[in-house]
Image (cartoon, rainbow, N blue to C red):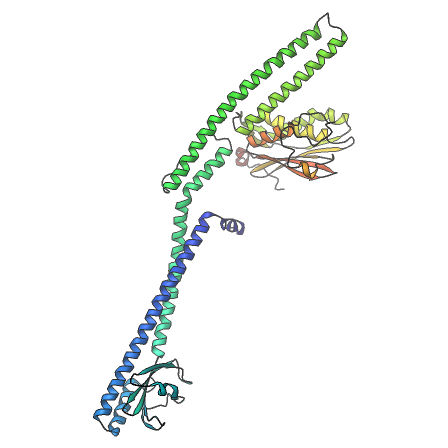
Length: 477
């Protein structure tokens, strides 16, 4: 998986839900294992203290029933049985005089804690100490035997090794469980958002004019089912609105075009009539021209509305966009020559796309007309095509004044004209229609602007899959 895809997945809901699940599971498991470890540690210390207390009670019984010589012999045997490096007993007076002790060769740095001795009353006291030169910690009990003090110690090395193994086992278990939780969380999160992904796919297809598409969700919970149902109801409502708009626009077109056509017809009759003088004929010609302009605006507005609403019906076929561009350049060449503009076309070979030929011809004509309109005399207009495996880009470059920064976001709006003085002919619908046609074909139009040095319009369309299957070479630029 590429680094870019991995970075993008960091922002997906599946990744975030999985991450939260893993973090929650890891923290909960860590807390549970910590409590378990503390309980094991406390229990092992309790057992160690219980063993020391048993040794202390046995020593008391031995002191009461035997003389000192017997006591010394018994504690030496006891230490040897336990291990002289793991166990010791020391009997001493409060004054510090040592009366009896076991082999202390492994406890050479053992020292009596006189603060503990002073605290001894009728109850034994426990202490954990670290003795230099002796591995691990040592658990010690202080207690009274008559007027004397006994100090019994037991090495905690075995207990510490046991706890270390417990910690290691808990860490390994935690890592295994966390990894398993990650895969489980990924699976559960994927299942949870599967319905949302289905809604997203449906929305993308509907954006591509598949207005009959509906969301079908199997499982995923009541919330996802309600979302799909609401989305489908919304689509039904949108379809009703689109049908209503289509009917309304048809009525508007009929209501506006019919009287304008009648006006145009009457003007034609006046123009061809024998009784009309030259002044009346000029007025009739102006009326015909204005009627044609209004009819063209109405038809263009209706076409834009159909394209933007998704109601436009495309006669899709395999179209050579390079041929359309070449034909468009040939068509506008006289206009370019009249303004002494160098019009060049870099569209050799075949470049197939799926689309409506007449609409793509109009898109090309509108952008060509726009480039020539805003290019000054002795300027240059260049049209080129760049083709990749998935896209076709048609690039229109001119050497006009460019587009002001304030106009860039507005130029594709209806009736918007960057030419504030309105000195250039046009209705402000050409770029709006071009963008609507591009979007109806699943494409778009972007601008690359150099104020004062010209503007560039880039039309991006999806390539023809059949052309890819035939092994056509693609320009990778």
